[in-house]
Image 1 (cartoon, rainbow, N blue to C red):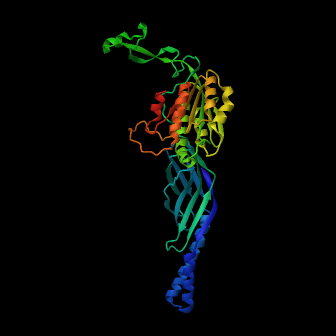
Image 2 (tube, rainbow, N blue to C red; image 1 turned 180 degrees about the vertical axis):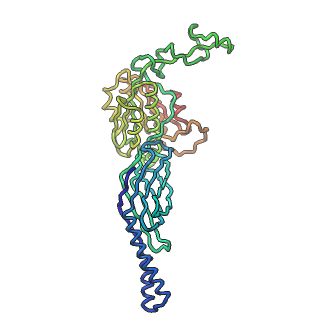
Image 3 (spheres, one colour; image 1 turned 90 degrees about the vertical axis):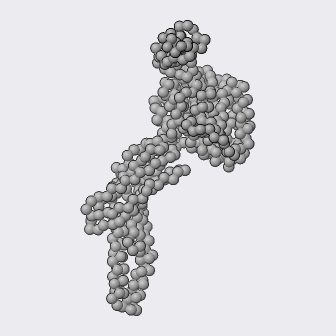
Length: 423
């Protein structure tokens, strides 16, 4: 629980000044019972004005949140405890202020009656849709008199924030090359089977006779073979490119595409990292954005990667992926799988990809120029207007395929999961 301090207080008293001037003028020229009543009312409102302002200046407010880390779509609960004030009751409006980049998040304002007998508790709930750090530091407390002659707006502050982690894309498989064979480790690259890891049965396809499961074949009326798990550990270098390529000409168009791509690319990268952890592999992340972020899995969990990717963002003019790969070429070896996630595939990066292929075991390039379809949604006819450079991008992808570099361009009506299944 954190104590909030008064940052500033603003008051509006124009109508009260006008009403007071009117009552004073009336009393000077036509003093009677009614003018005296208006003059007395003005004096009472002025007393209420200064008293309420004094209370707001000395108000004691504590804040607590139910969590400091959460994923998009989860509910964050903020609780503000306002201590009671002596001798008077005030009607207040409490408004939590949340600052979030590229996202509007505003909890509902709450109206309370602050009494002299008990503390007030204000609970607010908010749901975030995008990753990143969300600033919860400020709280606005507004007070207005019943006649509408004046109002106060006090802002209270204490440094506090929550971190919204990226969504994790659910991936079932991804082809990762092996580094070394270890018992009890699983990999998508089928080199050595684990005879004690029986996964199930499948239809017989020209395999040795000792693979046939005779009991299952007799029951099903067709030949069925045994299926085992595989043992290995993968070694992967994952490049996440969030910047806009300098080869792009229609930059205004591509910048709008890049904003949507950024969220999808981070989700995909985090999904691959989690998949690598689950399979017992080794992975290293290089994120090329506003800053170049390098993370290895040594001493880290995949949640540590999620926290690092929460505030990662790309820019229009920044470091280029081809330059980063050029610096890392000497670190690749025949046991390395290089995975690149990017928005655009230009000509400038082609030599680096070919050299990376000569050093590494496998190079996989995933280009996401479209907003992919969610895997549970049906296919629809797309009417999306796309830059003409998409055709050139696909031609470069076909050229790299001829050089044994795996390139997949995610179509505008494809899900990323179905593209990965085709690898």
